[in-house]
Length: 397
Image (cartoon, rainbow, N blue to C red; front, side, top):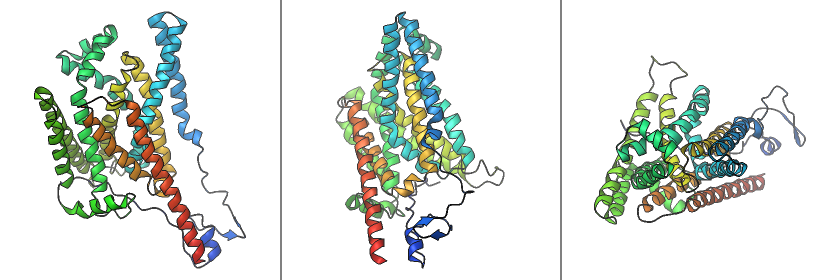
């Protein structure tokens, strides 16, 4: 089964009816227009406030920071220790949000095609998987595999010997970066190498990528070449570790795509709510896992306490999911036509950075700022395009 292509939807344009005044003041529905104001239908659904989307994230923040302060008090027995852990949790939450804003945009790209039931499950079930699965169980699994010990022993190590636990995690960073880099690079390339994609932000590059998308497996070939290049810059055991982990990341992406296609295939035996949801949910969870690698590893620069890391990154993950739902509900990706382009370029940059980390240390601040800059520029380009489109429309009147 061929991998699923991420289809870019076009932006919503201005409605061009026969009446010029209706064109100018179109609201996107069939409500009448009178003078320079829209006659508003009191029965129309009201736009949700920003706080309504972030309510649970704010509640989680308060609970998480209090819990972090309590952990600091329990471990040090001092108010200074409690305050220190409190602020570490806050900084980790900001780190997770800054590194994962592009994740929210990419999630929205997939989530908007899911049913409302599965959108809610992504926010509820997904946050449990994100916090307990990726921020607690994943690091424990890495330590257990790397050290050749059982999960219970890994948990004991995290609780009683955090320094040794952190050392094992850092030593496993090469394989983690190679795996995550391959997966994210396939996510980014799969967006741009789409022959049906007709909206281009960086035109001189994206236009050519769309043209050659008809060549079967071009994305896989590019990733394989990059794997060979970076592996060739390493020596001995490091080269073998990087190569195998990167190949596993590539195979995981292809497997998830095939699995998602099978689960989302029209099946009369499945309920309407389940169709179009299971496969996308699995895809989003694996995607979230790949995005979380950097945050989990980078968190050890601030603290070696597994539970403090889980609290801080968990708070950030809740905001990312809330922003994803908001982007879908408000149709932000359709309104700002280049926003998701910026997010996918940020993913490609992140993937290259993860590969480059096999050769040298790159601060998490660089990763976060690079992604934020690309998304900011794409948002600015989208606003300019909207203004230019409105100006052209006014000239035609």
